[in-house]
Image (cartoon, rainbow, N blue to C red; front, side):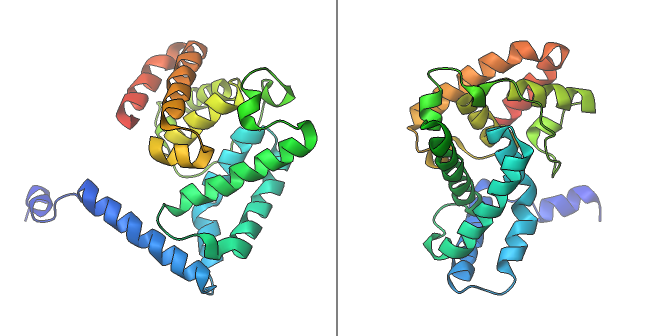
Length: 221
């Protein structure tokens, strides 16, 4: 039997099948958190640790701050796990917790929210130099070489917080626009505006990597 014939017998899962599998996984996680299932939290940390820390690094621009918030996020998951109902993907809920903690921290320090920061530059929006955590490959990582990946990461860190956040959630974490709207508590139209404005701002910073970046963006949109 050839590979082609095997693929005919076992075709690639449809989008509906993938969505249903994700829904069942979310419901299973919700039930497990509600029952404080042994080992579930550790399993979730292993599965999502790279993605969560990467998101926090891009959002805060500071490794020490990101690592402190990382620990606090998982404490919130442990304490408030019963609040997750499984109707959304777990990562959507996880990133929402993380974002709220970042906002709480910024309010204590500057009395600003992320939405308020878009109107003007602040210390939190200055160009940053952070070592982005490694994890599973993402659409941004599928460029030709390490130099391109570093250029894209550096360009992202030069954007203001809100545009950077939407790009990271869409292309690094592969959340849908609707999921990003839930995480950021912003209208879908606002999310789309931030996405396209962010893309317009980042492309001139990429130089020779812009063409390859365009290809990856088109595949992920």
